[in-house]
Image (cartoon, rainbow, N blue to C red; front, side, top):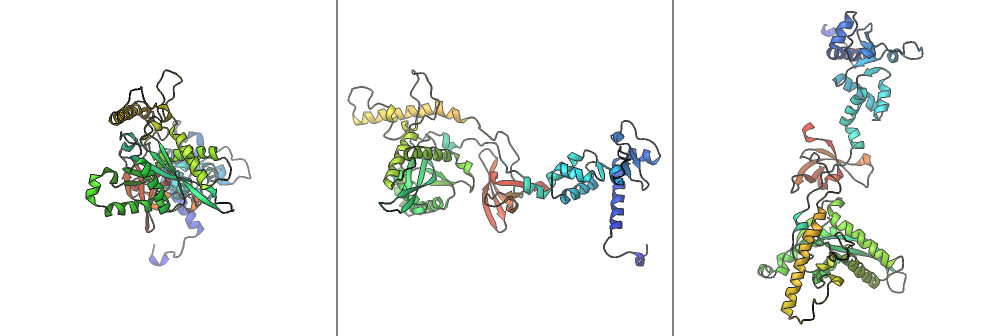
Length: 466
């Protein structure tokens, strides 16, 4: 063709249709080579051919069609009576499926298949349509599920023996509770601040008069003065907890380092924060918040209460929770008294179950202290035998899945927005656990980098396919 004979401008409908037909015929020659050669020689396809049930034939343009049983109805168009045969997993078939899938607004398999059946007969059409649906980025955004991973082993802080309750604690807030202020109608919000021991599952309840850092620190120091200074604290990444951690770090830096070494009670506190919007990371204290709320509600019912009455109810709920047996409670009267968190609390060894003395012999303070220490050691041994084996099994998340990798494109779940507005992000950092599995990552969304749990992420494009 000479240069001056070339047609310029956009393609018209006829040219597009002719180009598509040529690509379809080339695809049929390549994927149905044996059947096409026989049909081009006016021979029938072999009985072992996978197209034998479709009774293929070539039309006047050399395109392979199915000579279906719908040839007589006059109201049907020609393409429906003699649909074009297409193989599975060919690029041309994938493009045709993609076009029909998008024209039907990313509908399901049946709707797309119904639209394609008007003109085409695709071998294993349902599987071909589902294959494309799994690749469609829009469908991944609208139908993708948040990831999960096999349940992690218990951290060392949950299993080691410290011989002191509340040396490793988790803290969380609950509420609010509305209290009356005097005789007037003014009311105020009060919040439940719960500290739970990660080793003994004992709880300590405080009432916070606000959600700011100062209110939390006041509740924290009240707990410390009665339970002792913890070594490590685990909490959500709430602004009040972050502020408390900052102030405690500044306090430790301003204290004489020699005094810190001399006194174990003035050690710095190591604070660990869970990723945002990852409630299951704090399941050890979330379940205790639920128990505390139930106990307080049972005590207060629906009556109007004052601050004093709320604090009194919290102490009663605390004692009730700490008297519960976390281990299996036998019905045999000859078995040991069930182990409770009260057995481990300082000054309350066994709570109401432990006698003041084992006999009438007078004890010196030193002997009495050693006796109490022996009792405490006995309770920790019972915990090792009775309580820890109950934590061995996994209640959910039994299977291992592909870990997130740096470079993965993900959809970040935002419960406050409809699914169509969830932002896309790219993983820039991963945080493997002690078992090597990734359960928290850093995601870049625009110019921001956020730390998120994998349960808040939907995988869109893996790094190896990017």
